[in-house]
Figure 1 (cartoon, rainbow, N blue to C red):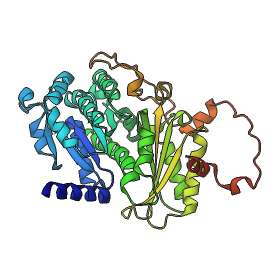
Figure 2 (cartoon, helix red, strand yellow):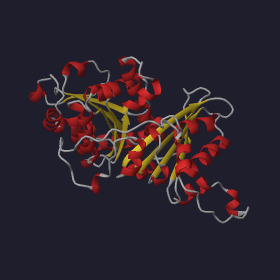
Figure 3 (cartoon, rainbow, N blue to C red):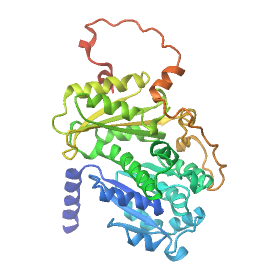
Figure 4 (spheres, helix red, strand yellow):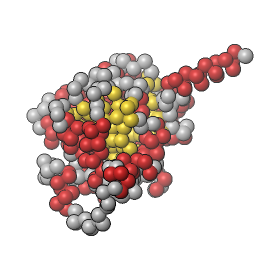
Length: 398
């Protein structure tokens, strides 16, 4: 009887708790990113740090830690060798499974280009997907001065085979935003913050109470088996805050030149205090709606964040992007795992470097300059669907 009572209690807890989201930081870069999220009080998620370097692992605040390859590396790290990181994760497979149990969604975060993150992250992602967990990779490419692009390319290629969606953040773009004179410590802090915003932008859609909710099914449908994804976040205040925050999000360097028209899923989250109004919701929707082609589901939610003050935060997540679109954005391109055979780690040539000459031109303007004039649409009658905005009609049709 006691066993059945425990099961009943667990089921009741899950009903109250909702979807379980876990953030799995892999290697030094991934663990540091998780540490930043812990210190920033990311809401409604569980944190796990995994590393081959035992000394670094003991410094993390996360209560959940997995030492990878204790026998193989003896806690001394992977020595910038992804194959050691991979073997260490395979050795620790059972502990990884145990740490992921109960999760509905898992973020696998790592800094690509090192040994542990590059080698172990694909193994952990593969385990998560085998367990039926919605698996999203959120990783950084190294700064140019680190000279580890070839390792990063190999790791990203391998990781792309084992995640539902993959957000790849090139640290080089942070240098474009903050300048080359930024200190090394500050540069890595900025990189950690970008990872934090990427995870928060998606997890808040699910975990935060909402005036207009995006449930877990919405997020799962938009991110399952979608391949490359990108995100942008904008924050603004004042009388025109909704418009300003949305424009910042869609013109974010992380979305620079991404053709949202080709995305197979588009998620938008609006966060603010209890004064958020329907007019602001409509403003965001009307700005985002023209960016997506007909037939693409646009899901927009409004969540209450009591800590945001008078600001409004708009997060745009575009999924299902193709290689051609990603190349335009200057981001390492990946495709859906089922669309191509698995490549061995270390078997992919380094990706060509991209140019950023037109970085300062907002992506919306660049798309307007490059795109042909759209065909004239027949005018709708004023009474058509009671003048419901088209982005709302898209949501209703889903």
